[in-house]
Length: 222
Image 1 (cartoon, helix red, strand yellow):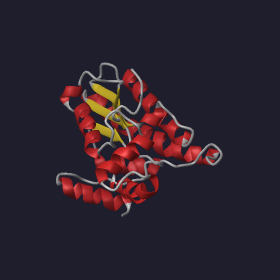
Image 2 (image 1 turned 120 degrees about the vertical axis):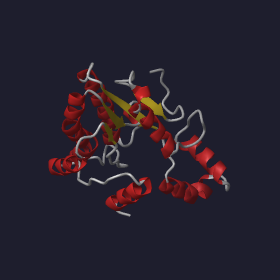
Image 3 (image 1 turned 60 degrees about the horizontal axis):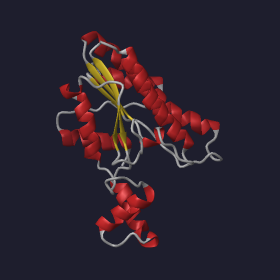
Image 4 (image 1 turned 90 degrees about the vertical axis):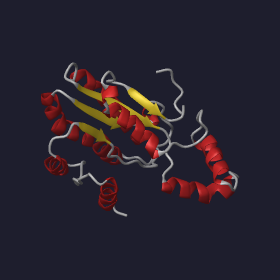
């Protein structure tokens, strides 16, 4: 299903939602989205792509493309929506980051670097928005169980000896790929819950923070 069609389906499921479509990797696309959306109070920057290239395969052009989509797209949205939030004295800006931004691995260096940039820009923005009523934070997911992930894990379970029951497959795959303290993959609604918290009045005193929703995948005290 095309991305635009998926968004329409999600909007229909929600009921009270509108769809504004544009390529955020371009100024024209960002302008189209901003014009269609109008004034907003909560901005969640979740647009992004990733690749499986390593250091030998990720050319400078590949780095440039992923940075344009994963980082500059967020900057475009911030510059279009945050001035209005600041003027109204309230708003939320939430970046969807990731553990690879603080705990990179040998592969996907361009993706890890783009996540680190998203985390950094969120903190810088929080300092810029000091005492304005607008906060800026990051929600950093771990490995999330999507339908495509479940299908991949199920198809590869026999070759990896992960078992036959889904509970065993998930537990063993998490152990091999994303070892964490909970022993499973995350769920989309768990990420949404963290976003909802930051977007609510309960998040008034949280800014410049990274909330990790990764089951303890990232091993750090900060």
